[in-house]
Amino acid sequence: MTGSKACFIVKSVAISGSALHEAGHALAALDHGIGVRYVNRSEVGLQSPGDLLERGRHHGAIAIAYAITALAGHAAAPETGLSKSDELLLEHAFFLGCWSDPRDAMLSAFSTLAEDFVIGHREQIENLATILDLGRTMSGSEVVEIFGSMGQ
Image 1: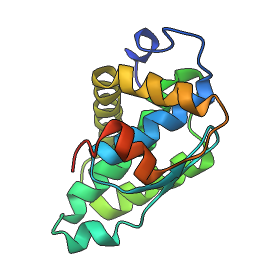
Image 2: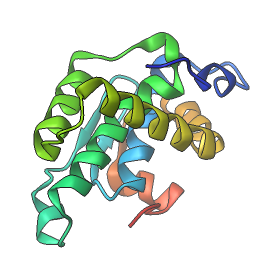
Image 3: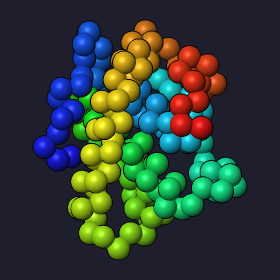
Image 4: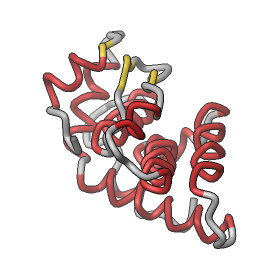
């Protein structure tokens, strides 16, 4: 990530970095129309992008949604870095988008969008992370029930 504003957005209370990281992924996915199957302190299960295409979303829009979702965990908890699955999701986003811009420029733009998402949704991310820190695994429908469908 670039010189980040993310350090200003983390932990108003004692919340684990891993819970913030996964909460950032889950809420970014929902906000960008990506279905969440489940979330816990260790991982988020996302639904296939196939239904997004069926709903008329363009490949580029899906690619941006996946890139922001991949980077939102790190933006929410900078000390956690990017996991292998985050990097894989980001690679899928670059493949789906097939942008002609340099990869580093696109990564910088996506990182900024992810940081802006986290700043704008800080309270929701912290609330979900607090629940996850209790050792809960939540279904996607539970997350939607508590936080709304966000971007849908």
